[in-house]
Length: 375
Image (tube, rainbow, N blue to C red; front, top):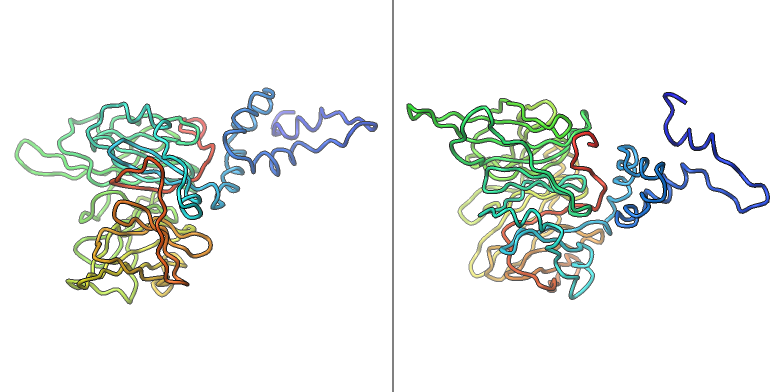
């Protein structure tokens, strides 16, 4: 029937055998069973029939599967290392002395693009955004191993200078993945103009935007529909709304005060959809890493200092993630470490074929598509 979903059409034609085994309604099969399965078996189930292929590939099923994939067991960590991009299980880093090997094969096509430098732009809803040589953006789903190069950032004008500010997230109102980028254009008279653009996966195009914040660089952290950076000349976090393209400010914790022995490092992470802020307090011979979580977005009083970790003369540390039991995953020199705030115990956790890395991010296994028509 016209205007009805495939679920309703299939139920209309469903035949029940009163003498046979009970038959589950297809909405139960898809919404309560298949939507809770990992991505790998779902890829095989698409071969069952044209109907199953259509439903598993539909936007509504992808969203249902994503809601179920937010659980901790489906989280993975992506590492940007000298060997290229790799990833491994996040729960195994918390729970096992030695985790599975870091997989570099899923990103083989990206790693083979002969880029001198690879930058992690961000992770959102199962997709990872990458920037090659500060010029070319790529969207990549490590789980499905699908990727796409985005259109050139500045097709209408020659590019003068690298893309120094960038971020990746999801516009809930438009149901659309978006990428933000900014670069400097130098005119023949020596003047410099900064341009910002937002890419829409739905339209597969860039749109010029105005933004008022300039004193930040690197990758923004996506939370609550906005990208976030630390502003260098002030003790505040700046935000950029991916829907309205409006800049804003998020206050740092009241207990944080800038001094010569306290500084932010890798300023922000995300925990259960909340901002995480880090501060290093360097006091010879030791260094403390202080970690806050903003429990209610935009409310300064909701910053909660969850823990302080003692680093023994190693100022490079920062946290990756917080497990459901409160344990904190840290980088600790050349390896990973797990800190238990309750027992004040720090233990090492190693990944096979681990190597030092430049950047990291956390993503969830999902069916999210990199195709414009399937966003």
